[in-house]
Image (tube, rainbow, N blue to C red; front, side, top):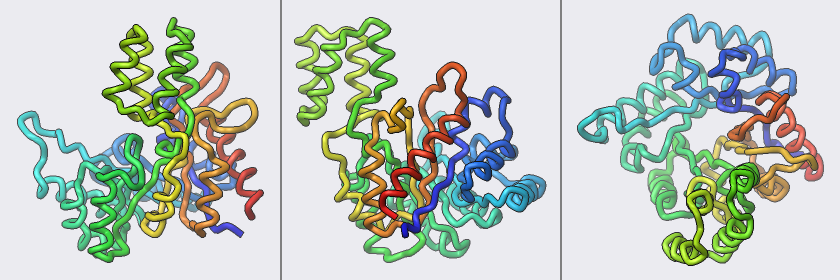
Length: 327
């Protein structure tokens, strides 16, 4: 029986949140309705007194936990090192921000703090004693275009190995394991006038491992227009994909992964995700004995008549069907 647990991040409901069509309590209630007991909260959007936590807000979270049986399993923090107009924050200034985030997590009895790799391995190592003091695992997200074994992530991995701390880790985002182009973005580009044959050519370049620089030249030879070049750049950026995702890298870092983001862009009519091979990804987690949370993270566009809540439900149903095959 797999010990993997399912939850959701409040980021999934961003569309309803910003339009004042949903409250945080609606999100807790939705988790409970889907029989999930874990929620991740994004500090910058959900904390009324960000970067601080008021007594009233902490009390509200506890009340909702008791009411719905849904606990806070991770805080999603932001490292905005560009706060100043004249320069980036230095290491000590970033450390101060991380300490505040760790204090927030400790106060809310939250076991995991997810930050961003902009904090650097140096700052993360500087923060380790504070993570240990507050009993919170400090993690960085591995997000497209990075992979588990890309050079930048290996710097963190090597530091984790040297430090030997149980309070440092990663939060893999499943977007880095995509093996297909973003279908919704692809279809919108075609509908907007992009030539499908040119976009298909861009996909082939990505699959064949052609470099971004060489690909630009080849696309120019095909007389690719602005929309087509935009899609090409997306395929080599935050929406990149590969024929064979870095599963071996994921296995390598698994011991440092207390929490994961189940990124999804769209759920197709056949019940599968449009870009990420969830069947393969979840099998890797089950085979490795992963026992942390995978929180649904919807980052697509809702279609008429459907809300983010609908997409989250469909995503969880898909995950459970897949997991049922391996349990």
